[in-house]
Image (tube, rainbow over all chains, first blue to last red; front, side):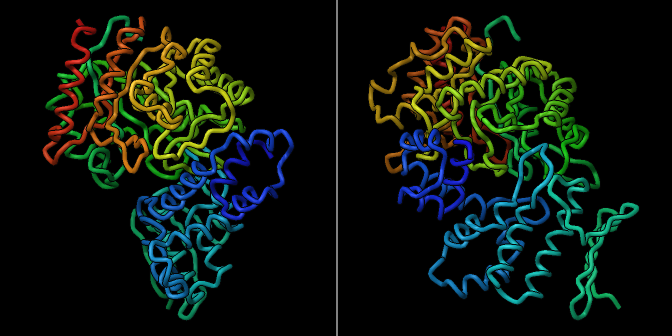
Length: 191
Length: 309
């Protein structure tokens, strides 16, 4: 792992920072020789800013993660009433395998959207009712697709796109369709 | 690049959905926000130059035409003749592979359409590990980091239609972890010597670096000779403050006395300096400068008066 990737890991991953402080972070000798120049206070301050940024980051059409997943995050709050500012939620998310798939750099394609990564994290953590969680994710997803017709993030395979229309189906009870029709979003039960 | 000295200009970070930025409107077409529109219409002629910061419109593939409605609306109102672009996606500090082809295509289209005279970009990382950062991080201050930054700047110089001006990075709120042992002033000088790139010295960024190294008082102005003074093309000044003992690059329109002092010292020491820019003044609902921003701009004009003349 290069020095820059180690820096990214330290900023995003709480468990990596713990291993670094304990002297057990597995890095190449040439990178280890550089890490002594890092100020742990600066790493912690940057990591804290990134945690806030993840929660406050607003995307057109869907808002923040808190806007997009209100009931899923309410389930987290119920489980962790001490986490008033959701800092622990953000830390747990950023430390997860799901967050590692999140990629958001202008001009670059591939990777998960922030919302998909959070949904996968919430699913792994079994946050809230699965049907509610999935509905929140599908709602965010169709809004995102209405805004960005050619997204740089990887569109999930269960999204269908044809002739200017995009749709996906939640096979719950009742089955629900999420679609874009022109500039409009359609969400409703399938009769 | 302009051959003559410019007086004081303004730089604006234009966010999508922000009070000073752009509004998305799929029906009528995107527009400049009312505050922004009013400001550039009423005060643009008093500015020697104007730069705008590029911010992505969304998370879609980069396409210049997606920006034309909003930027056309803005630049139809701009009466400032000299314009520049502040980039936020070149990631000049990265050591990792970073595909800039789509960014170059978009940028050159914007340069051609809006007649930007130069492109300014921080020598740092706007994203790391594929994830955006809340505040750009400095490059890796190692020999390998410098070699990578030189490669990145050269790539941008070759691909972009106008000069790339490399800005000294900020060290705000202890959010700028530094890896490596290079002094940041030496690092920028070495990069400019290697690439021939002109430099932007952001006065707050310089102070924040010295502050992060424990310098206070007169010692904040130490080491200026280590900077690429011959390469300095532009000075930036953005509102800053000290909060809980940390230097904050706040962009809130209020300049510190130390920023004006450092500006004065640099004006006297940078022989090729062309522009001084007040970044991100705060605009009220009428698009007028808020009181503190107006005061800062007046103070900056006072400091630069002799240099301009």
